Length: 415
Image (cartoon, rainbow, N blue to C red; front, side, top):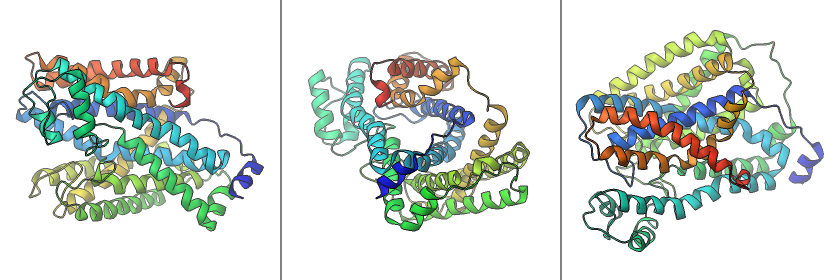
């Protein structure tokens, strides 16, 4: 009945919103930059930093990494939520989930089964601390001192690492988490009739001429920011130190944000929220972002106890979480305003190539960042200079590789 209902309505695909495409491109570039900082300042499993990190590097990296982590993946989930219901209405539940399975799960599984162990083999050959057999997957990577063959590395990965640390060392947790949220959304919309009727059968009229008053927008954003704070703090409070969320570790401290952001994207699509995003909101959103970001940095720096970017006991971190989530919400909205105001034109052919390759770039960028970082690790350079050079080289290289992946015949089915 559900499938027939949607197929009979024959919904028409909406025209692309160019600034959303460009925002997604921007966020992908930020992900690559984030991991350039991460691999040098903290190490990106399985490549642990060989650099001695001084105070300036630590401070700058902490500011950049905590700023990125606060908002960028949550904004990805929001943008994904925006297109979920229109796609579901157009394709039907079965075809929608089938397409999501192919696009989100298959790349993640292939990466974890093939590309990720190959990265271990590359490190075995290129770095002086190779993989070796150990009872602990962490020891096998972090404290390796003896050499192993290609076959040994491969077997160690499947024997010790993969069974315990699925998706822990790579970024494909995002696609698995997004697929899980898509499945949950389809189930809820299918089972709960009022949601089915409201989201799939009811189309609200476009009211672009009736803009939401500024005070109403500020109030709405504060409400959602507070919801983000409550959900994330309660989840963090429940997380014991070193808690791992299986089957995907992701970022446990932000899973609440991701669920709320994805849900907000669905609601925003239904209520045509993007029609109310306007240039006059830029000033207040930037001011709020600046204030809450600085407050979050202060409390993350001076609050007692250890600061953990994604998992752990956040019982003492109530104010840090509060300001972090407020910053995430207002900065995400500021980016929507900026891109709608200044980057809403139809992209050029060259920019379209990059937009089309954003997802493939996201998938392959670890295989670019880490090998380049290994090359810099053999040079005697200040870690801040390494980060700068890594951002300068790894970002365009990742996009080139992403575009090349898109050129493989048949890749459009997945990428």
